[in-house]
Length: 583
Image (tube, rainbow, N blue to C red; front, side, top):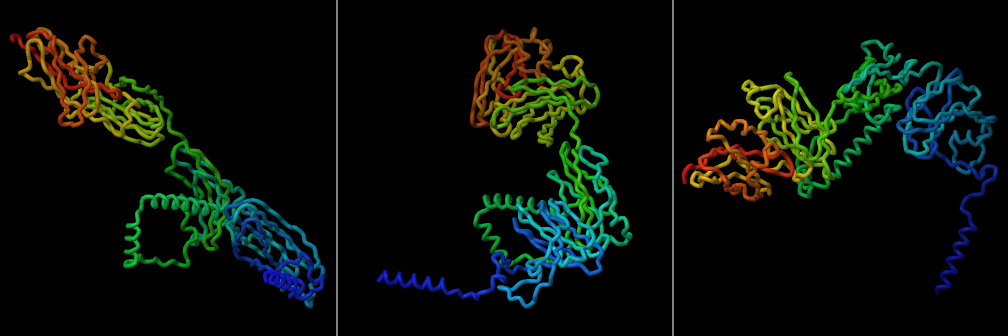
């Protein structure tokens, strides 16, 4: 049964192959290279024709001229991709016979294409610039053929045909010098000029159908306004795609359903679109009008920009591009900076006695985290000092520096510029109050940078920097001190200094209480003890120390320093105590 069914199917297939359903046509009328019927595009005269160019395909446009037309001009304006186009004139030797029996229906240009005749190439061009052919007509030509092709990309072009001598008036005219010139370049602005277009200068003042549009970008010069608009569209789509990805990552199902629910009951009103909308309304022209001078401002320093000028015909919806230019804005003034080493404790002094003086420092954190801690403390008494931290031209923070420690957390940049500026003095300041400074210096700031601190944010500080003593525990040879600590494990060092003959002013107590007097300025013989301390509960972070080996009836000044691997040591307020004479 299977063999019989297979044999029947083979017989049916052979019968279909042997019996052709198509009528036999004479070989002279149906050659092997017969061109099938394709849509014929006639190019109108005096109008703009937009042509879509698929990748790798040749588009043909046909046109004829009037019998008495002495000349013609053909303008092809590519959008954003380079194309190839050529113009040819085809002349038929004999008129095609009307009684020929064609295998399939033919259009008139295809009859001309198949008929005997000659074809002469008039003009060809390849590129993405606007090109115009102007020349005499060919009286013997039967039809003109315009071929357009884009090799690598899908794009489009605009074609305009003018029948007769002179300019068509469809596209605005360019001057003899179409170059955009640069008049001046600053740090944040560029001034441009260009020769006026005859279309603009010859236009009466009340008619404003022509004007200029200046575009600026940091990527390239555009050969046409269509290319600029296409680039803007691609950038906008890229931003929208990125925004959708970010939104998709953080949006849950409920907000989407909620938004849909409210749209069903309260849909947003649709704004009616006018059929007479401006084709150039979406352009962000930095300068627009009939003036041939433009100053582009609000630019970034030390950045290269591309400037394009287009003269637009709003009546016909066309434009012509000048030859664009580029310019690089001036960079910021170079200042001398001092590199800060890791963990280096630096004293910054201002020798200038003027009201304002500044110094610049550069710090590069170690490690892949690119983070660090900047600690500052002013030692100038009534001096006003301001610190500004910036990176890549952007200010990160700016604040005043006083007697108390200032911590600035640095994160996310490979290099930081630290600007210290002396802004003046307060009314109560005087040179005599600045006891911690060497003579002759007007101000001083203590500064340290470190990459060892990896916690985000500034480190915790004690709730108070006061040292407390216990009178009941004060003896002839010892005293007991207490101070507040932090939840971080840190080292605390206690220093002492004996005052002469029990007189509190003999040893210069006011000089010892200077806020910038750190352990580096103290003698090792004055150090009494160092201990580590840590308490996770800040309210209970109290530590004590018993200082022995004292003389009876003597006055001492005690100082406690909070020592850390990063930052400036924190000095507690000095405490003066006197031991008992009799116990």
